[in-house]
Amino acid sequence: MIRTLVLIALGGGIGSVFRYLTSVMAHKYYASIFPLATLTTNVLGCFLIGLIVGLLEKNHMTNSDLKWFLITGFCGGYTTFSAFGYENISLMQSNNSGLAFVYIGVSIITGLFAVWLGLFLTK
Image (tube, rainbow, N blue to C red):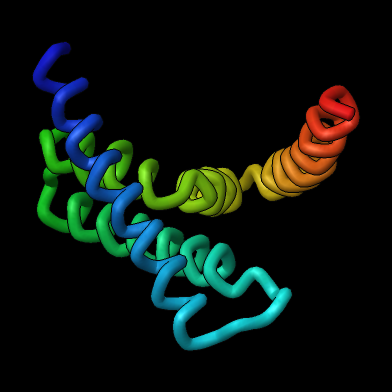
């Protein structure tokens, strides 16, 4: 258990640093009101989680320490949107597309509402 927590913490720390660096690079080369840094982070995170899960499954390493370090740690520290994307693809691949679309809709609507509510409560 401690080993797993350390692996997640290390991966998460590295992922968070990479998220910051992605943001710095995006702002350096693209100055606009459009949130390109977040979009880039989310898309890269989704690509990485797909690549990592695919490679781990291909090499029969789904229960390895790499899973905790790279998926939960690094990808989770980089962006939780990658987990959201992976979970929805998994639901669709297991013939639960309806549930996936409910999850997508509920996540977006309640997420936006939660941000609004948090801002509202602080005013």
